[in-house]
Amino acid sequence: MARNDDVVVITGASSGIGAALARRLGGERRRLVLAARRGDRLREVAREAEQRGALHAAVVETDVTRRADVERLRDVALSTFGRFDAWVNNAGRGIARPVLELTEEDVDEMIAVNLKSALYGMQVSVPHFLARGSGHLVNVSSFLGRVPLVGIRSAYSAAKAALNSLTASLRLDLAAKYPGVQVSVVMPGIVSTDFARNARAAPPPGPTTARAAGPPQMQAQTPEEVAEAIARLLHHPLPELYTNPASAELARAYFADVAAFERRASAR
Image 1 (spheres, rainbow, N blue to C red):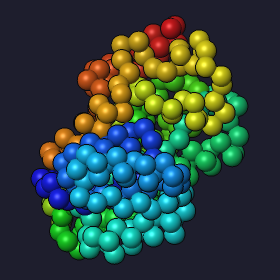
Image 2: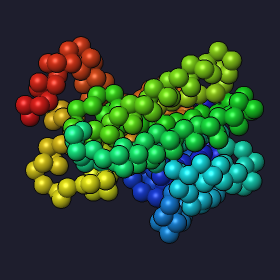
Image 3: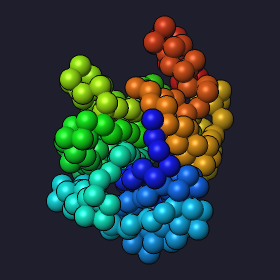
């Protein structure tokens, strides 16, 4: 159970879900450590979080694809606050390229940004939790990591599926011996951020990208709605969380009959 003065580390905090989460937790008077590459924007988010009540929001310019940067992020959190209580691996990037057009560079970047960065976060944060006997690791994945129904998000979906698996493996490793350490994966659906615009090889906005955004049954959520779901998760940990109410039913339909689900999806 989270306390209002807990220390929370958030990667990818300069925009989108990460920035919304920083502002949301600021309202709970949390102590925050915010990480991203864009220092100016990160400092702006820190000010916004403090204006909402954060006791302090430290800023660490971080490239999460570099292990040394993630280690430095941990070290700054410990030197500033003496501890951290939750670590949210939120940084990520999409892609807009179907499988047969993927390059090695595409795949390497998707793995580096969406999987290895989270692995670095797990490996630097969890030992601190184990030493304390408590803590909460949150990996922000995607519904597409569970149900890969958007072809141009191919390598992104694959990287997020790997993140889901890695998270579950860690949770199983720790469950018996470290019951006070929580490990969660969060799977947002469509979120109204700049994610699509910033995706690798993103096409210009138009009917194709709109159609590829997701299933018609799933309405887009705002970053604030996703941040609210993560904030609740920090108070009431769960192994897995779909932030969109439609996601769980779609996932059940997918696994009940993959062929039928894919026929319907491809006919859109």
